[in-house]
Length: 570
Image (cartoon, rainbow, N blue to C red; front, side):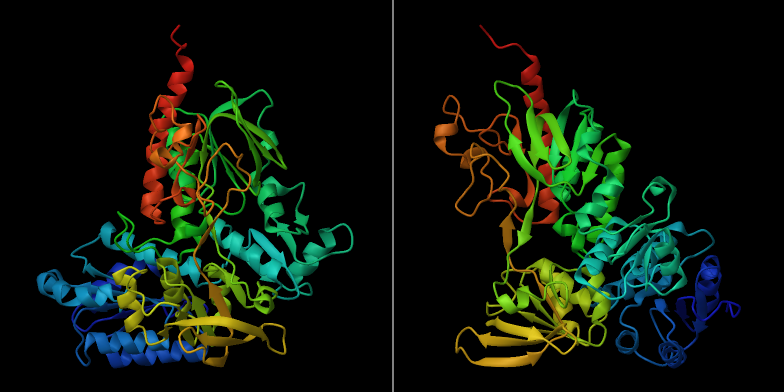
């Protein structure tokens, strides 16, 4: 089917003996953008995938009936995943067998052997079916496929750490972009527009809003973010907003959505990328309301659009350098290099950063094979490499599963005996099934170094029990090891625990209580300053709990602002 499409179009492969006509009719709507082909047996499907691999054609999706005529479904799925690990895999179950087949397949869905199962459409315009298909294709397009749109062009002769960081920023913010060498036609066009001697990477912003600055040579990601999202000084000097949110992770985004929707003038200051640390998660599968999972990038983008719809304003690339508390109900002042913001209430939701490994030779390779966080963009560079992930939490598990779509092998390194006490069961099951992922317990990294090209080439591992060492080849290292709070900019009046996390509610020292009563649950000891999410002492360090705290704190903000409007009793 669709023989007229060029080979460069991504392949959607439909596999069924009895229901192939139904699938063919349903996927007519995708023929404009995809090479939709059919197979009536697993053998034919495998041959089609081998042909795609040999020709270099991308495979976006495999949709198969729940029963195959010549091979066990799960055996076929395993073979197809081995051939094309980045393809999304869907099982379409006829309604007559849905009750039995869905129960039989559910344990394998939980282990990640395929992405989802759906009821085979019974007629035209089954939009619930197509909603799931489009969702999976969108996820594939965002994390695997090269963009065919270049609203932003990155001009660079090599994959420098800054170029990779800019690409990761553009991926996470949803800006369509492509990378070109300086001697390409696109590179020459950018160089002709650039005034001066170029320093790479160059960023060519081709959309109309950036007509005054079409070509820039940013020295940091924050410089590019500030150009795209504006400066806090854009706010009028005499303006005092109701709520200023510091940090655009799940807690900050939830506070922005609920605050703005309930009529509070709301701004959000984010030092890096909207979505926070959660925005680097390739797939969050246990977030309420998303049965097929949602990437952290998508969650962050949707929450931002939702907050904008209610009137919130975002300023990205401007870390808060100082918070000056107001006195006797006066507005608080947030100081950034791009201007100051005055707010009646402040929500501290600046999140945490991954702790540093502390191995000097590897710190020098950050951006050239060594990455803190999931670094979704860097995952595409790991094809046919042996990759190591350090960390035992859900974020490390999600990163390992995503990296396994590209890397030859993924090894999770943990200091504990196993993952059971730190990682969700669904991720442990998925990791145990995936043949590309292994877990190496009771192990730490003590050294490492580059290969001849200057990229990460090797690691020195050490057993924490026996101190026996082993040197291994490594093409990538992803570090997701614990949390370090981001709150050096807070005044001493905002009390913190021994690890630097903000104290709220009953955890605030009793000398800060008023009339022997502690502050509200998410309130700090400074009136009008609240904290939510990972930055808060005692938080659960989960996306759902952070979102809940951000939303819940808005009611406390309302109560505080109402108190400012009521004159004190004589």
